Amino acid sequence: MLQQLGRGLTNDEIAAELYLSPATARTYVSRLLAKLGARDRAALVILAYETGLVRTS
Image (cartoon, rainbow, N blue to C red; front, side, top):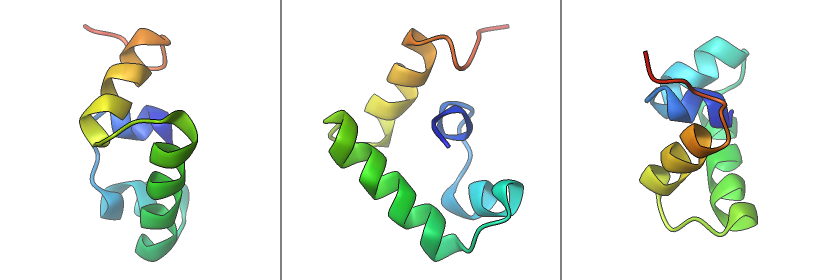
């Protein structure tokens, strides 16, 4: 999920890619924000890049 966020996918796109409902994708994003102490999606994107889940091309 963090990798998909890092690639800039929306909740609906993440849901489709991971075969989840959009509501489940939203819940998972919210839980990632809480568990990782991130204040917004942008912080999760930064974390995805910093941890190497997403590479710059």
